[in-house]
Image (cartoon, rainbow, N blue to C red; front, side):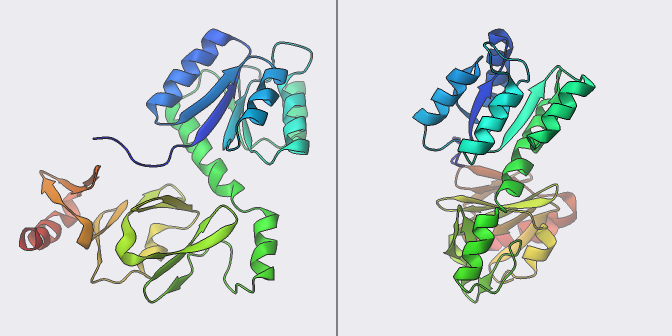
Length: 257
């Protein structure tokens, strides 16, 4: 079944093209969208200018040409509002001290672990969503809730997307997935990520519509289309049911489906 989750758009900038291709292939397997990869700062800036929506860049410190990765990062900070992660084999103290000054979201040494990079990317995007501009917009719009909360009303939540909040009704929410220090909220048409624990969000959900099926998952009862073994089906998604919740969950759905 195809994954309908919106993909994260990444540009990879690495000195060695063979390594870049390996990184690209590994990121694609993790379901990221690679909109371009190159080995020079000039080409990277051209890629950025050609694409309106770049979520994150993975930069090496050493690049082809006169401009290295740290200098490229400085240009990105000055001209673009795009987060970046250094993915490099260079751990010299002088280089690290230079890298600190451009404020990367992470500094990962090769050889890297795929899960480590994936977590760094996801947390970077979560933290990058807390921009001063958004806080300013909230104040000017007279919103009286904090940046990290999921504001609610009786029929749904106001979920943050880019620089604004949009209302999503409970019946449009498919499921919630907890991942480390944040929660992913899957809806019928979009994905929202919050740096807030699942337990806190669950407290705000109507119990007649949502049920916990796993330590990391809460599902909308109304959108479950079937089940098999220890899995619930919601559209193209397969949601695991843990042993702790198995009896209560499947007794419920055997009556509903």
